[in-house]
Length: 454
Ligand code: PFF
Image (cartoon, rainbow, N blue to C red; front, side, top):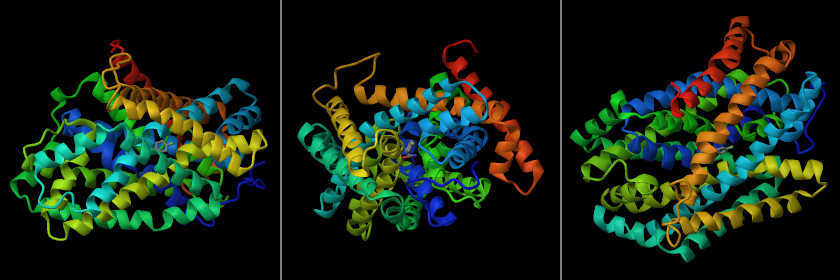
């Protein structure tokens, strides 16, 4: 079946194009905005170790599984689950997994776009010189004023959603691929520059490194372990079909394993670099590592305001962050768009307008949760916190668990083997053990730990 099949949306022009796009999906706000603040909230080193273990034992095998599922069926995640469960002679109910993925994409994008809007606003702030000579307290006032304004947040959220839709409208080759080609290398260079700046803080640099890499397991709670695992899924774009849909545009002869190592490796390095750049600034300025979602917006501007060339670097950095967010947001909406086109007979334009408008409207709740509805708590969480918890900590790991079970237990071994086509049979055996036992068991144990059974 899979040998001749191609996606109706087109294909990546090469393996490199897929790597760029999937890395573009993986590297985003999760690495630069979320990783540092959740590491700060969960006490540092121990959290980082749990996160790294999750990437290795759960993330990488599941990313390989998602890619192979997508490439085998060459359809959106919902139809993929229908086609492949048919092929395996399994229950049709597996397609609910696709539905959960598409829903998770919408929910994530509704807050992702709001935060990407913050980054966009910070490009303008950097340009207008708002950070020049600033100290920690003036930067905090700037941030609090900004997130306190629903109008400003709505404006930037709207702009970001429009930009996302504009790229997605242009389709696989013209839109998605071109957009990510220049972003990743430039972001990398800028992060290295920030790390070099952080090194000038000497003892605070050491303190930052110690905070990140010296584990103190007494500091991590069961919920912290869940957050670390959830983040492994979030940062690698797993558990909701984004990588599956990108996999469906992947040419047949490309090695999935090698490609996945590359993507996961780059994603992890970017997150660690962001942490190394940020924590020395946190400590040098007496800031709180557990400051929450505002962490990078309250730390990096201090650096830009006081370093040589900071005006230019500040602009470049936030521009890159917006682009990194864009290359992720397009993958959050692509599963829904592909489904609407394939099943509802919509044109790409119509599909984008529909899915974009729904996400945009949902973003209003998130915007208000930072200001006029900040007191509104559901299960003890603001709307933003609830959406984040629901998606990253629950939906993505549950989605990933099911994908692992599907690839490890439901699909015929011959099919997964053929699709992965690894030159070394041992490589396949290791993947098979990880995907069938280790990854699902690890997700399950973390859930048991959180509900207090373990
Ligand atoms: N991986 C992205 C990030 O780290 O910013 C976020 C993301 C994109 C999550 C796509 C899930 C997804 F399907």
